[in-house]
Amino acid sequence: MRGTPVLRWSGGAARCAIGRGGIGRKQREGDGITPAGIFPIRKVLYRADRVLRPQTGLPAEEISRDDGWCDAPGDPGYNRPVKLPYPASAESMWREDRLYDVVAILGFNDDPVVDGAGSAIFLHCARDDFGPTEGCVALKLPDLLNALSGLDPGANIEIR
View 1 (tube, helix red, strand yellow):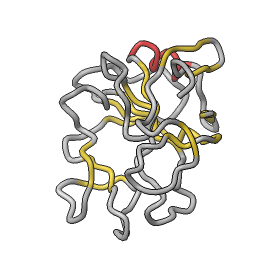
View 2 (cartoon, one colour):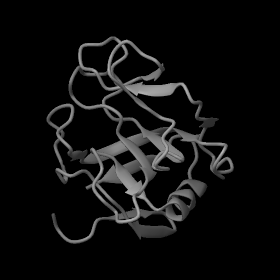
View 3 (cartoon, helix red, strand yellow):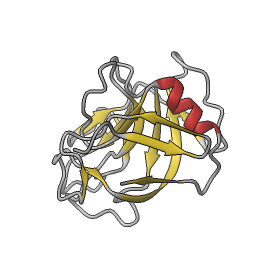
View 4 (cartoon, helix red, strand yellow):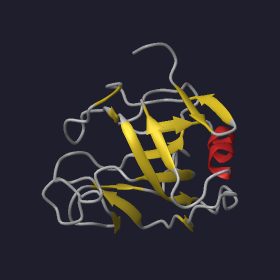
């Protein structure tokens, strides 16, 4: 990895966490690689019990206790939001560790979904120590809110 990863946006920049496999060409589900490229930001999800609705022009929805994201290759719901409990593997969007208090859903492997090519690539809150993600990009909450504040529908994120 080349130095400290930084996410830049119009009007700002901040240190970020990336996948444990670095940034590159995503090979498969679970490889820990943050995919390089330009991706649309589909919408923002947030925990209304912890944060106010983010000030953004992007669509924003509250996360519910039963919200999940399917990460099971071979399942028809793969790389899609699902309701928990779900019969296949799915991660909970309602997390106690605060990493998903605010989440921007990135348009990675979703149009169309390619089975096993990677799922749940988000822009979300970073751990205090900026520990690696499973392939997402993570910012401290104030930086994430700042980055989202200037975005409107059609906004993209470039990861390189």
